[in-house]
Length: 234
Ligand code: ADE
Image (cartoon, rainbow, N blue to C red; front, side, top):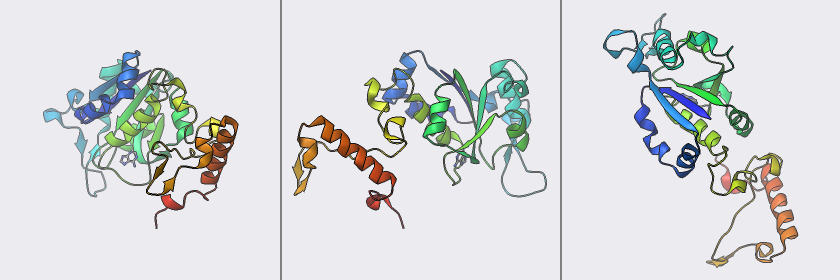
């Protein structure tokens, strides 16, 4: 897979690129690249944003600055990218909420383009004419799309062949098909008893069928909310 992230802050991804699953994926031939809007803007002094028509606080990322960056990368009219089958995803707080199903679908793409906004967001014409999708990582507002783009990249990249150490470790995890879309079952490791808190006996039994049954039960319980008492906020 080839992922291009359009951003004003490519440096923000330095930590992300150091993560093992990302390094593994890159070593397997997947590619993660960055385009800085500011490097391609047709405006003087690196300008990429402007005040909103109609007034209001904040600045808006200009459509001509975004177009110039997309053109520089793809050598074509970015309004034609959707027709060419490329998924161009704008990160916006009001977009479709990211979930495991969307991540699964994105992981099947050959290439992805992620557009990070800043300030008050994008000029609407970016969303209307260049983006094929708008994605949100939650109903809250971040200062920019970079963290959201990293979340998208993280969940997609870990699904790519070669990203995780053990091939099966992404198969049976929270929200996977193997668990019927339910959250994952609890995990325990040594010590078997700590401060009197014992690991469930079944996990120490060596009885694989019973362990499997227990895990599926726990996963279903968490899905129904019964197992989520310790995860709830007021
Ligand atoms: N940009 C700002 N806030 C965001 C959010 N919650 N999700 C995606 N992109 C964003």
